Length: 100
Image 1 (cartoon, rainbow, N blue to C red):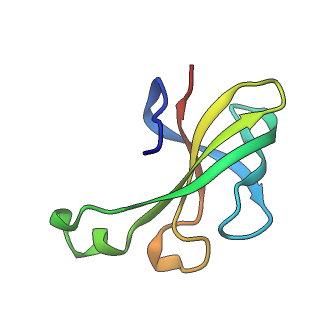
Image 2: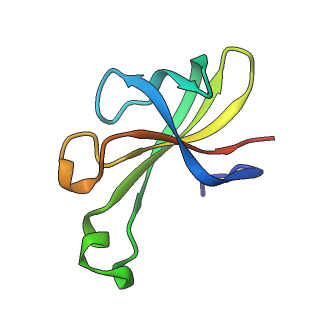
Image 3: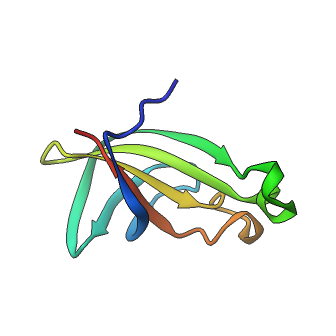
């Protein structure tokens, strides 16, 4: 059971992020022009596409991480894809929610 954020964004917002390895959380991310250094992280929690939405959804992957920055703020961030194969997603990073 993975906790969900208290506030979900209407749409996930792209962030710039840097991770050491495909299955590792970001070391930092930039959201709305602010660079945030990651102090601690949990994840990934892998979420797959819904099979009933169509064949393309079967290969779509999101790897979610719960991140806490050095100021104590907590975020729900995901990478679109598995970090290695392009057919699983764009490999871009997105902020999807904020923990209270």
